[in-house]
Image (cartoon, rainbow, N blue to C red; front, top):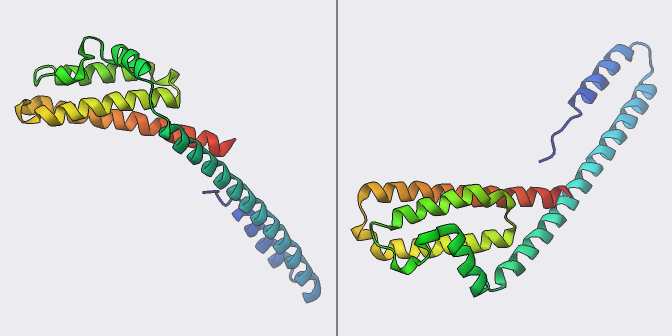
Length: 177
């Protein structure tokens, strides 16, 4: 949303009209008001143009993101990324109730360390790994200790927040440029 910065202009206009009301004719005051209204219309038009352009850039970003999301992830790159993020926990399907929580801890530790260098495609790989962990958790959840499950839920919330933060940053840059 574009902030309305011209409230001081409006206040000055009202002050000017009040002070000059005694020294001008109604026709002169009418012309002053008309000029100021034209200025406000011009400012409103500029703000509308900026908003329209930002909307177009956001739509282009969204379109590019949809195209990127339709492209399948490379299996070799997924395996490499999984190894980088999960280390010894990279065989996600074999994680047990005792090893699932440390796997999430490892994922978040690596995500925090590397996220600033990641592209959106890197985030796609990380999200894919995160989803695989979630599927494994779903399969073994009934055997996971309550304390571990609470910690996992907190880590899931953090991962989602980090990912959303990156999306918001990218959308902001797309709209800004």
